[in-house]
Image (cartoon, rainbow, N blue to C red):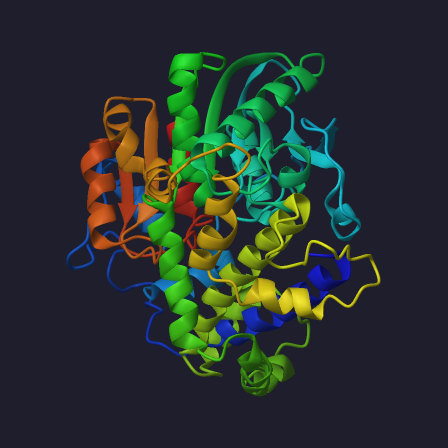
Length: 461
């Protein structure tokens, strides 16, 4: 999306986040209440990774307090339960030469250049790659969190943008319409090689590890599968954080969530904002040293300031905004004539409202049928929709995952992107290498003390 539209959406999203943070549902547990290893009925409980925690460890950290999965997804982890991590990790950004050569449309120039986040150790150390989740660049807050956690564990860290980010589409994607797992993974693997070469005279690399979150976790599984035959990195540890099992099924759930909670689509956003903002006045009045962050949202949530249904609308909107950004970029890069007419070339001062509406109104199913499938069935290519769906499902590499002792998964039984059957698949496939918490939603407990300690324990030599 053009820079000024993206900034406007960022402001809207922050306000939406505040609205969602005020949802009133009986989800917060008292710290002295039930242990967070209690199984959710019908889903998988905590596994062997949790059993390694000592009784002292369990007593030292209160249970994760939010048992509503959508609330957990938005609110994250309260400050007092977050893992202590070093503030002095030497995080920097490094720029790569484009891995592909293409013209950059004027409205996408904000997404140049191709960058990755780099956190080096002073001496010889293994290098951990982190693959960002849907739509995220290397500047993501989760990139910072994971970089700090792995740096504290003795790793140098390189965090890569998601193939669904505009930066990656412009500078690293051979085929700039994200969604085909095979080619997205090939592009990621090529970028990893470029990062390794870029760092060859900067650090002494003693080995390689890999992780990713959400879509990035699913991609990490396929990258590890590719590397098993290509052999460039021989990853010592691979950790999948809240992966989608079937990418297509997971995003369909997010589409359905928006349809249920905000049936008026973009036309309903103004009234949604007005209602949510009205409930925040007391929280603002009481919080004189206001900082708009997860702790403020958690305070707002505890105050019971707004309607509980807002949370679903927020999660659906956040996903739809990421999809709109990706769809717009794919359309203008390939001149697909779906969002922007072929005979129109928007400039930095063009009225983008008609194109934004078209992009926002596009569901993921629309993206598949109108952009992805036509792209892979043009210019002599023929890739059926069924193949695209099948390629993006972890069932395709289940045997590899089951037999790879260096690969583990962390997820939550109430993750809204997963079905009960998919949670069971992860538990069955990974066995003792699956750490499945009953609560945390989608990435909500990533910064939770027990999650970070288990992550560092897994990556330790």
